[in-house]
Length: 340
Image 1 (tube, rainbow, N blue to C red):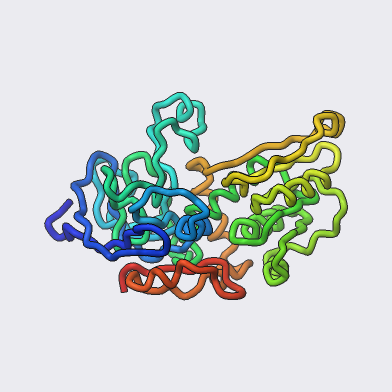
Image 2: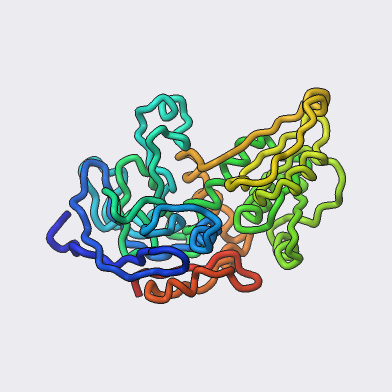
């Protein structure tokens, strides 16, 4: 780290419930492959809302935030990016050496660490994006953001968009197929747009009429109740999953991505799975290629879909508590701009 780089930075430390304390945090020396990023804008993912409302367990105290975009301000030896580049980064930090990493399943690295999920009193305190600066250790996937992509559009790539890219890969070819998307939040809406762009007939289910209306702007339509070839669920609702499973036609594929918290068990008829040649699979986190595809997809469709309209105007770091609430009608993400 050069002498011009500040040795401390300001961070919003989550201390439990909806409590957040602004603290000055020392910036460590960067090791081999480490990168220091100045956060431009961070969006508030639904999982962070679940954390502060007690629906999801998490390390406490910690610096939350894992959907963000920022500028590289310092880099250790053999870092994958250069100072001055605008970047987004993966949620997972992986070892690259365990059996899972070597087999291509880095999302489930045996020693995985996660941006915005680590204890503040551990060996990586600056792990979250609700801070002026964040340290990205070696093993973090980093993607350079093209100049044509606004911060508000780029930030969700790190979680929502990349996860959608992973679910679409699991679903297989969707061109010309009937696709059912469960949930029209940020992930669901992104999946609607991605499937529509690929040439699918996209139907959407959601309990919120406003979100269903929003889905029409991204290439989807309200579900008609008929058979589908592919169903992707982002709701995590067992009832919604059961309904999607019941709509699969012969050779249908069901991809589950929203079931990340304990829920009611799902009844599956093995005979129906066999006779209908059904496939049921799950996706959690994503691989490095999915982050790069996410940035490419958002840039490719930046003028086709109104991505910028989905993110609320960012609040400053000292007002971050106001961002830990449901976004207003017509928006899917609140946001924080850590530096004025």
